[in-house]
Length: 87
Image (cartoon, rainbow, N blue to C red):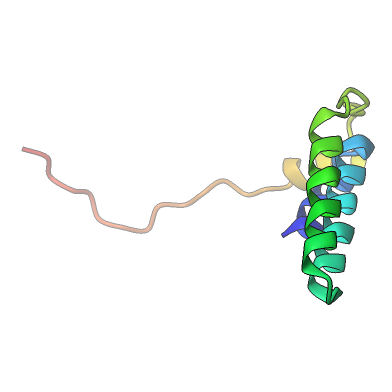
């Protein structure tokens, strides 16, 4: 999930949050690979503290021409059902 979140933040060009999710993924991966669970737990807790305290103010809100084109080419939904009588 951390990698998916990282990819989404990359798509939004929010590199601060992307880097936070990447750091989280690295720490979780280290936890999974480590034999010293206590040391890895302390390292993960430190990373979570640093991630939560870091500012998040560099999101680039400029439009992405490709994604805007995809949104404008969406067909409207078509209704293929029967009408329902409401009492």
